[in-house]
Amino acid sequence: MSWDAAGRARHTALVRDYPHTTDTERFAVLHDAADALLDELAERYMVERRETKELLGPDEALVRTVRLIPRTPAAAPLAIAFTGLPGLRVRLGRWWTQSLPGCACADCAEDPGQLVDELRVQTKAMIEGGLWERVRRGVSGSWFETRLIGDGFKAAHEGLMSSQAARNARRCGFAAAVQWAPWPRRS
Image 1: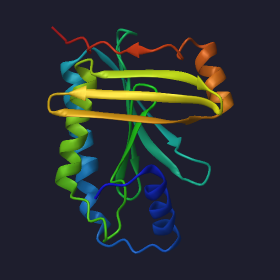
Image 2: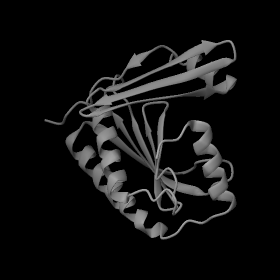
Image 3: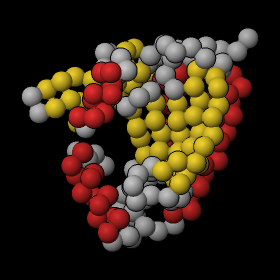
Image 4: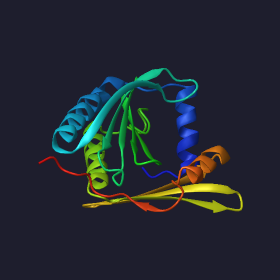
């Protein structure tokens, strides 16, 4: 099912207001797969692993978040938050974010196995240097743009940034276009 951003936002709001999700425990496999992936990556690549409890939003509970930060600043970091659905919120680099599942309602019927494959494919693309990001200014504000390209995978995200986030990105030098480098392997 293909959705535009506004359509998905309306659908997600509807699901939250009138929860008709069924059998959400089928998504527990995402937590197991993410833990296995994080262990595998920490063993194979030169990264620092940080585990914390964080708020995902103002109305959300603290969730376990694991970050893998490559030892070279030219490579993009990975963060995975383990949500209570059970589900995942994945961040690649600075602005690429993905919620797995995107929606847990019975109508969308997302397949947990396909979501695990999606997690692995997107992570592999980033690790191999396939993530590009930038901030651009427009008349109506600043936007982030991201592109992720990997073996058999190509996608792009963009979105409006708050003026504070855009200022912080420019101040910290993160507004310029960046093609993230591949992660360094352990010897």
